[in-house]
Length: 453
Image (cartoon, rainbow, N blue to C red; front, side, top):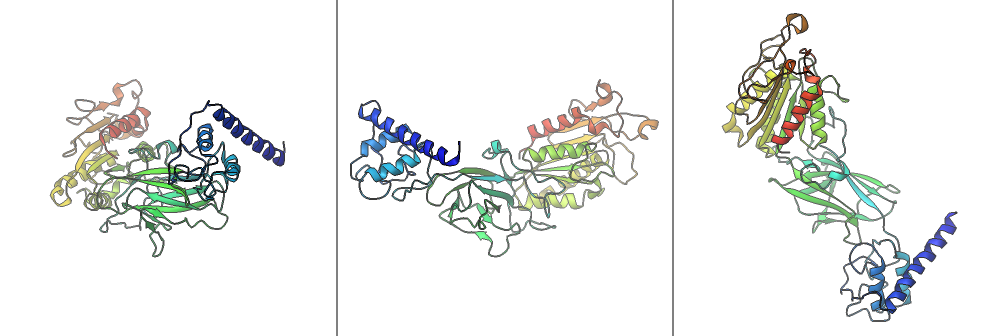
């Protein structure tokens, strides 16, 4: 069927459906009720369910031939002051669909689709060493797995540039449609540039913007959302037509209270795409996709006294971003660095502020006083509320005595799991223990159970 024929058939079906509903209403089969006045609903949607259907036709009939007021303002689609055949003609165009217009400015134009898509947090100048990762649509309004966002306090240190804004893409079903943003509160600010360049802020008035600045003929627009409040919370961001308060899509942002730090083994450098043989970073990527604020590091970023780039990041997160829960996990020398970092955080707790190390994990942990250190790290990280420990015992010829070992008060109780006592890890060596799916899953499951986003 060609387009012209399709339009004719579709129009006839709409008119026929409306006439049938009107006939039922005349016969008394459809109950009627007057629409409220003044009208705050979209054109034709007299019942407020966002779809123009049989119940709306019944409401329309109850006002047909009547003055627009009192009680029939929503049925006077063209603003003539009376509900008449001109309004009926517009109603038939909308019937079976929806509108982005509101009375008395109805033309019968169909609604235009619009959507919002948020992405996981930036890291430095972009997303690396993570891949740019969209928040799944089913989680966009989830208060835990939805778009997390860092508090962007003035004192926050961003050595590689502003990275606390969340990328959001606005999409249109057709170009030229006038869409606006509506926010639930002023904790959210929106920018057209990722570094908040002067003049690039999207201005809100009464928590609603003007029409968004889509380029000519464009159907996508990239914006950057900032959490500008000093306190934690959640906030909604809607996209809706300029002429109607009808939400087309919504994102629910929540401020990050937690920080997850992943430390690889000797020579392991975070990269995108992730190396499948670097289990620590595989886990980190999984947690990032699940909505955690995760940072990955080479273990050499932690000095033997716990100082360095990782400590600095944790310190600024606690002091300037309101982070109050920290999780750390590492493999091999990264396990030794996990102890060193936790020890320093605990040592300087009074200066940093209120926080808890809620989770730590070792995988075959080796002390990291130097790049050639082969000593077992058998100390439980100071002040951690939960510690997971996996290790293997190996031999000189298998892994040069690079082994972790039992750590007091660890999970599984009492000292952790020697994977060589299991069927799946019986032949494990130091160089593969972090890659077992059983080890990775144990970290993912326990960390998500113990750590707030």
